[in-house]
Length: 65
Image 1 (spheres, one colour):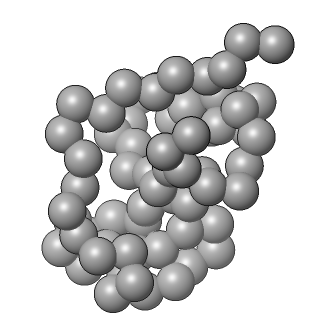
Image 2 (cartoon, one colour):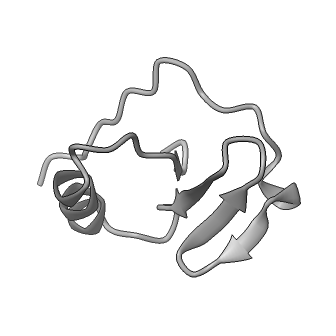
């Protein structure tokens, strides 16, 4: 199976540790939105989430691998 590649042209510089934990992510006060935590999710889960939210801007936390 091919690995998913995600291109992030400009990554966020906000500190994940200072965000308020919420279900499946953290709330960023600076951006006033929830950042999804994709670090423990499968490529299929991430693809499904992206497709379901394709009409919105998505903020997410990813592993570098």
